[in-house]
Amino acid sequence: MSTATGSTTPENTQNPQCTPGLPGAQNPLDRQDERLIVTRPGLAGLLANAFERIRGGDLGPLPVVVGLLIIGVIFQALNANYLSPYNVSNLLWQSAAVGLMALGVVLVLLLGEIDLSVGSVAGLSSALFAVGAINQGWPVALMLVLALASGALTGLVYGLLYTRFGVPSFLVTLAGLLALQGVQRYVISTGPSNSIALPSDLVLVRFGQSFVPAALAYAVIVLAIAARTVFALLGGRRRIVAGLSARTTRSVFLTSLLLLLLLLIPTAYSYQQGGRGIALPVLLFIALTIALDVALQRSSWGRSVYAIGGNVEGARRAGINVNRVYVSVFVLCSTLAALGGLMLAARGGTASVATAAADENLNAIAAAVIGGTSLFGGRGRAWSALLGILVIYAIFSGLNLLSLPDPIRFIIIGVVLLVAVIVDSLSRRTRAAAGRA
Image (cartoon, rainbow, N blue to C red; front, side):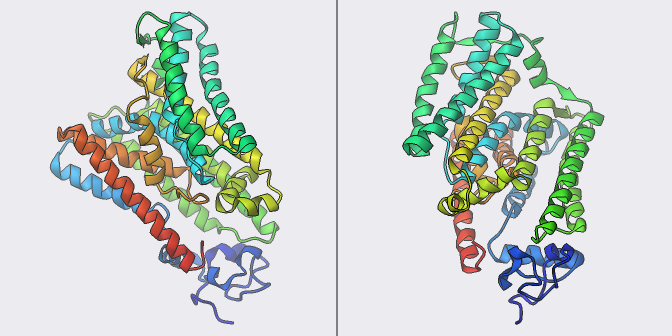
């Protein structure tokens, strides 16, 4: 039998049970479909496999990366300060808090659900922390825990309402958006004013406004990528033992090298003359993104999330505890939103009724979609939050430098979001036509 593509995939070259190019029992269990077989070893095979995936509608981060390059070229041509080290530092710093909120939205979208209340959860956590730590004088560490716990409790309520009563996630989180905004206003109103200033020597503010030395930033990035590489290699060995396909060692190292360069280049640039470097919240955002990506790709919980997002009934029949996964994802999403709210308050040095109550909520949801997470569930990576939030804040930064008004900013973000959804819908159709859905 001939292969559909005439080539073989580098994924199966490490499997001792595999005979490249021969569909059937010689190939890994997850590569029995001849349309998935691409047999060409080495770098050529890696590139051929990538080309076949793109042609089959699996675009990955390519549209977002191309979009970022276009945005950078256009705004740099319009304003020479756009890509200055100082502006790059600020852009990354501004992105971190809402990026943490978007990270949770990615998880919910992978299940094919939605959380409309991440902004309200973020605002409530900042209000609880400020009232407790400043107005009441309670221990800062205790208030940090309580603020994060408020997010976890909110997610738990969402998860139970969804799994026990079948309330659609759209409605339960919409109700949460309205109710939690009210709670945020009530909590803040217990103080003398609608805004609580956070002292500059408060540990949370110091964390949110600190920029780390270049050596520390490089070390954290290198260690994070090294940990990701180790998990990828160990996961690949387990897949081979189970008779499944696995990425080659060369492919794993090449991907890690590309990620390392993508993170190190802007980091190094931000430390050039005039730049402020990398803020601590940015490192926290990157570290959590990598950790969540590893969990999604290498743990049984992560595989369950993708399985439920792809076909919930199929996942249930496969023995996955669907309700437990739903609850865990809603809890994680709201906890990350609460963390994002704390970072917003730390960066601004204040908590008020307006914290996370402007466009942060919609920006977090838009970032997850623009970054490449499918609205239909089952497709996306944790990196979608990072890429998507960079697109949004790159546009904001460029428009601010050009002194364009807010209405223009919202129109452009709306158009970008619409394009992202159209690309997702078209790639989904292409994958279905190519037998890769």
